[in-house]
Length: 90
Image 1 (tube, rainbow, N blue to C red):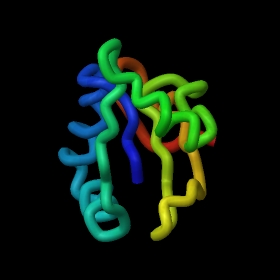
Image 2 (cartoon, rainbow, N blue to C red):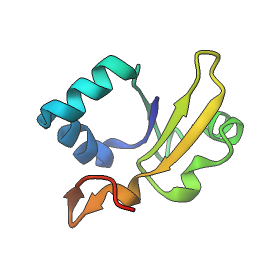
Image 3 (cartoon, rainbow, N blue to C red):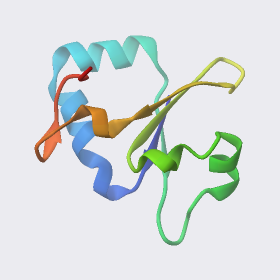
Image 4 (tube, rainbow, N blue to C red):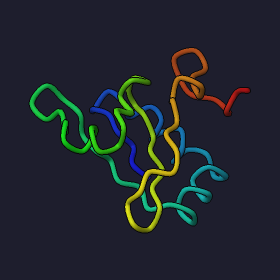
């Protein structure tokens, strides 16, 4: 799973690491790679190949299969709860 964003996207990472259920689920089900997006490193070639996931804003999460094919793009805005992150909302 790609977590795409910049150094301002640390809140989600803290949420996952601070919640035992989330941390365990991520650790046992995903290999997580943090893809940096910044003024100096926009990773444009990767984002084009992933179908422009940045259209959801940052951070954005992209789940890949074993061959690197995109399975799902998740808008992190659906996980926001005030200034932090909460459970997935319908």
